[in-house]
Amino acid sequence: MKKRKKSFYERYIKRPQDFCCALAAIIVLSPVMAVTAVLVRIKLGSPVIFKQERPGLHGKIFTLYKFRSMTDAKDKDGNLLPDDVRLTKFGKMLRSTSLDELPELINMLKGDMAVVGPRPLLVRYLPLYNEHQARRHEVRPGFTGYAQVNGRNAITWEEKFEKDVYYVDHITFLGDWKIIFQTLKTVIKREGISSSSSVTMEEFKGSKMIETGCSERSCI
Picture 1 (cartoon, helix red, strand yellow):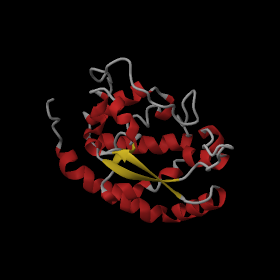
Picture 2 (cartoon, one colour; picture 1 turned 60 degrees about the vertical axis):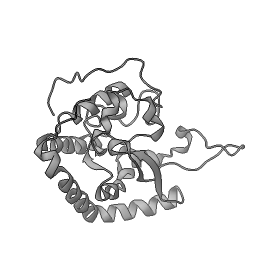
Picture 3 (spheres, one colour; picture 1 turned 45 degrees about the horizontal axis):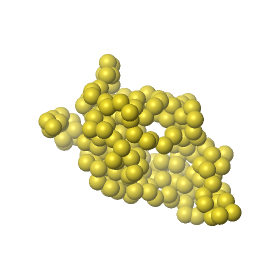
């Protein structure tokens, strides 16, 4: 496979910019994060921070941090209840406002994530990607991304991966900042939080059709 050529922006500016943005966000939003942590502890219990392994750049596994948004409610056999039962009204509010994702700023400081990039998904999805879809791991996963401002969880997995790969091949300074501002608009309007059949996004089980290229016609 031909190695993707990186732009000057991606080589020398994007990572320092991500670090500075994450640091500034932590400083400015620290009161919000503190209040959110207290409310999570009161309403959902401990631990306040949800940790989960996710694949990052080149598929390398890292630990993702989030505020927990679900209870640990279990059935009589000790099994966790379905997501739609454990996701409380407070948890839905955290997700719709993206407050649950604020601890990911720590991941950005560490270099696990970028401000903009394909969202980090579950480790168990790795063997399910076809060759084209797997290209989403050629860059650091992002706090937000091209797919997040073009449907979020309301579009299909195939559409989401197509947009992820499109972003990989079209990384620019202006494009990243356009996505950042579009993200603010999306969060304020609370668009695309859920899919049509799930409280978040249904499980990815692989694609029947092999993706061969990106069909996006507009630049970001």
